[in-house]
Length: 116
Image 1 (tube, one colour):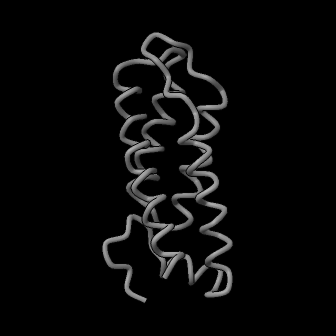
Image 2 (cartoon, helix red, strand yellow):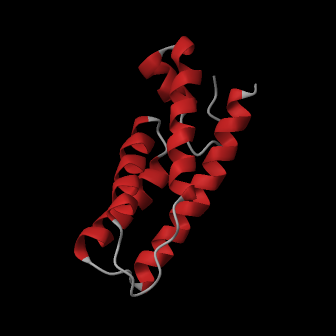
């Protein structure tokens, strides 16, 4: 299967889990995406919540696994920013918004892929 213009790599997922495991893996990934999207964004000057940090870390690792390299890279940058700062900065908020944008788009693409 050609990966078209997906933000993830269906062929990578198939290589890892086989055709029969794709729906389950991508369904679990969507749950993770939606859990992250449900978290409130940190506000500038606010302490960074541990749940937010853990969500970013999990999303990074899971995104790497399915070949969603752009989102994985953004999550890595955001995770690093969280580690370096106790409180939310403008750059952390900007990265958070970028992660949210890609996560929403990726969620839609996974939904479309699974409905084929």
